Image (cartoon, rainbow, N blue to C red; front, side, top):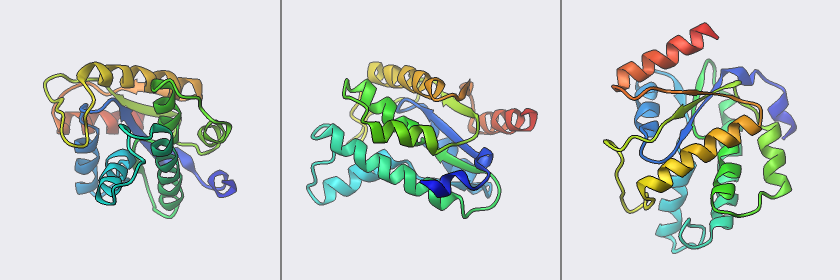
Length: 187
C-alpha cells in the first residue's frame, strides 16, 4: 500500500451511495466524455462468482464477497494512479467497510487500515436513493429500503474516514455531470 501515498490522489473522485441511484449510468456517461473511470466491483464479482459457482456472493458468503471487493478496489486505485487527469470511481475502498457494517459484520483491522490509507479526493459524491429509477435484477437483489440503508451507511462511513460527502441532486445525467464539474471547479 505504500505506493498509494506517492501520488496526487486529489484527482480521484468517488461516486457512492445505495444501489439504483444512478452511479453506474453517471460513471458510463463520464467515460463517454473521455474521463478515466473504474468499474463497480460488486456487480463484476457477482457475475464472475455466478459463472464459476463461487461462494463470494452477498447472498452466500458476505465476508468473502467483501474481501474480493477490497482486493478489487485496491487494484482499481493502483491502476488509476497510472492514468492522467481526473479519475471517477464507481465506489471506493471505504465502501467495503460500510458494506460490512451494513451487514452487521465486523470490520477487520486490515479493511480499516486500507480505508484509512488508500485515499481519494476529500470530496466524495453521494448519490441519494431514487425510487423512480430503482430496479432489482439478478445481480441487484436488495430492496429499496436496503438501498436507503446503504446510502446512509456510506455517508457515515466516508465521514468517519474524514471525507466531505456532497449529495448529487437527482436529475438528468447531463445535469448531474454539470453539478460534478461545478463542484470540482469550486474546490
